[in-house]
Length: 404
Image 1: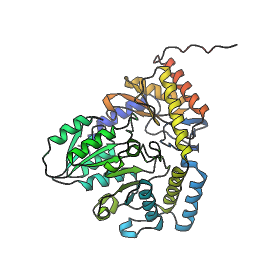
Image 2: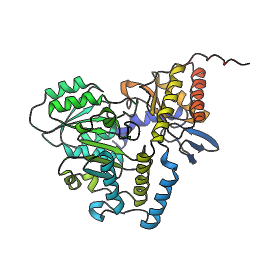
Image 3: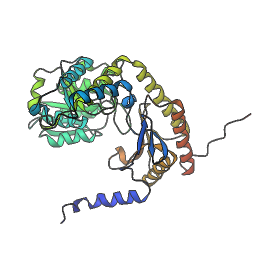
Image 4: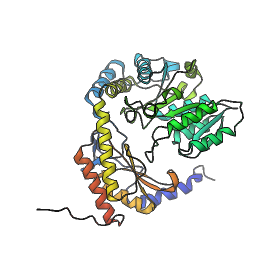
């Protein structure tokens, strides 16, 4: 058998998807104009699929910090920190992250994916137990696959099922529970207070992936653990720079003693080239903006509520309470693909998520709201959803607004 023949089923599904219109896995923007707008050919397109929650990708101070460090330190490090050494920015970013979260230790990875891959696969080993939410992100599942601990899944956002599964485990071995602050597909938050209580009862450890909740939840924007008031019960917080902070990279913070031993135990950290100094500098400035400008979070919350309420009023089935992730659920896959294509043709870019990568086998038009979206852009996006929904028979025709 040819080496790629094993992917024949994927190739067939992909070709069928492309035959229905644009390729959702290869959307090309010829130019990005701002955090909320791009050009596809000559067509201006509103961006509602970028995770650019605070809109910091075009922040002047973040750009200036990156350019300055690019000129001072060059384009890259050309190796891992274990082999090539750390730059001042790497250690400063780790200190700033630890300080922001009120933790003793911080560790920076080259991507958010690697942060989960490395931390999860390293913390628990043979004889230990890794207990993960069934709807966990791919990076969490891949961390589980890379490690050697026994993996147990519990029902999504179900603390009682978690309790039952923990009760069945032997007293030996470490137990690590992994959940997410905000889940990336439906935008729902974990019941973290209840999960933290189960963790304490079982004598387990708790890791929270705050990738989509950093800068979104909590009085200081630290995420769900802060918002739920259970930061003291969370042993490890993992996150990414590629969403709220607008750059790339990942991190883990913790108070556990001997945390730094992970630097020589965690293979995805040891054997990956470290972040370029320019990206580190931009991330440091973005973190400063997050810490000193609460107005960014206020605008994000207001925009999220406005967009969610507008789609809800139209009659769409949505995935969760208002959050920056607004999932429009479609039961019919082909209808969802047609809907996504019509939105793109109209000048609105959202994400198309299809089974088996989605919860409950649903097709999802996944939208992400930014603090940088204007009220006009939000209302325009709602109107586009309404127009396509009527055209495809998803919505009943909307009544005409009164005039005169």
